[in-house]
Image 1 (tube, rainbow, N blue to C red):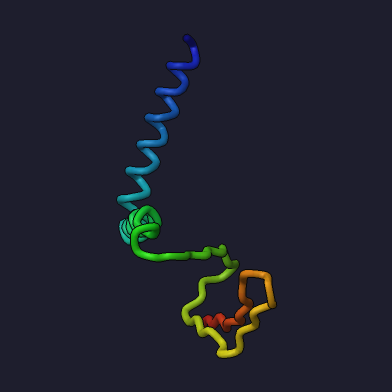
Image 2: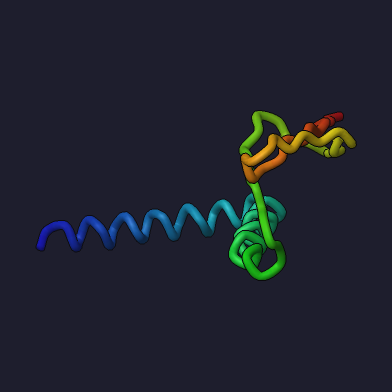
Length: 85
């Protein structure tokens, strides 16, 4: 069982990294933890959630009023504007 020792060593290294990161960047760590909690709770808070990773954070999101519903397709298409600083 040579791998068990390696795995325990990796776990120790990972724990050390997390501890150092938390001390150096407490705000980022807190934001990440809050995001994990929010992600776990989304099924209880929303009927539908669509997530898309973006290259840059969007500070403003506005849905445009026009909406298309193709006949017999069971979905709608709506446009939105993403704004940054």
